[in-house]
Length: 273
Image (cartoon, rainbow, N blue to C red; front, side, top):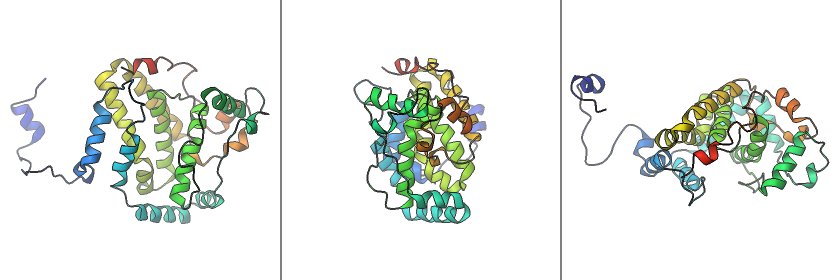
């Protein structure tokens, strides 16, 4: 319903925005045409069957990269190194995963390793699917480990790979990151995933209203799980847990409390076309 008259004046105030021949604002993000365009696309588009859901991710990362200073992020990490000895030790160890079917073939049924084995065998996907080169600096290493742990986090949280499950996992990670790091570094580390969260909610509201309640439920579960974390989830070395029953791994790492298995199986079909 259109708002006009005194109601519009109440909301908009008496002051007119400055007029210009080009779009200007005091937000560098709004002023970035690439970021503005891809944000609108992600928030307003449908989930088509012609392209993968991740099709726009490279363009999103390119647009976001234009607005972040890597030297500034490196300085923030250096500051957090000094404040958080555990984080500094984690960075210095430079541990990376090398998951193969053979390395988890011995794991007993019901264990985390068995679940990882089933994922690799069943999906044919690589757990180490991006940033596969050597991490030469702290930020690159941090990003690499986040990607390496992503699919394992899906397994452990019970947040599936549907639109709802992806956002639930993002929210859990964002909460944990903001609880651990300074707001400035947390902002840099979560900007891309917050972009995906906000545009996903808008996309559901535009085109898939039956999914909106599940999306809000997923966000709530993610908030609860994230608030239980003592450090970012990506800092855990899951190789240390591969022979442990998966339910025990969940409880020990405060990753229980996800949706019952299969709860969101209907989401994928409901959010396409």
